[in-house]
Image 1 (cartoon, rainbow, N blue to C red):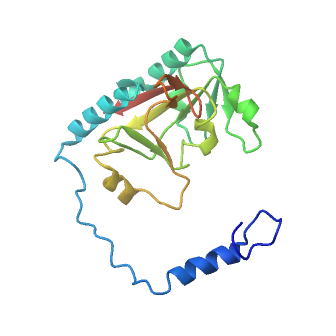
Image 2 (cartoon, rainbow, N blue to C red):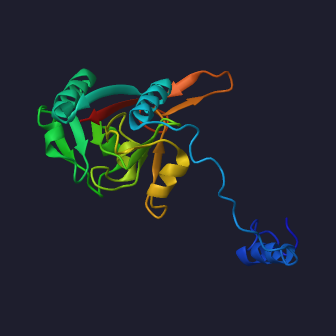
Length: 219
């Protein structure tokens, strides 16, 4: 037990811990300015090259990548839902209606009162995104239009994410941070959910969707 804690309580007060931290830092020098002269990107890429790198890294993470134009989104989404055998699809607020115009799958509204059990029973979820990062193959959601609450992309087993390219693609993490609002609920997705045990046996779907379909929509 830390000296000064109440005997038998098993807890140390917040005030005691913070007091010791302040005492330990009393003679410390103030931190200098944070250096920002690091590389913003690791190559000078064209927008098309960034989109190609994004697709490559997404696939490396075992996401399933599909390319189409704006007129083809509905057909691709309908095909993916049919291949999955989904009977229901979760629809966040602001999702373009035309993305689901070619499917007859029952559409469910993203509701605050939905329980985890209800969300787990959903066949698929379709969302947009805030942006995607080419160098890391990462999709970022910030809870904005067509993205919904964080939990709707963590609980259902199948996530279809639509990305407008090249306008929603940045080359690097520093470029992404410049465009994101840190006060928003950011979800960073690099492929489908996966983890490995001590023997490196990969298990998917433990803490997120088992299957991630990414639809890259160009002009």
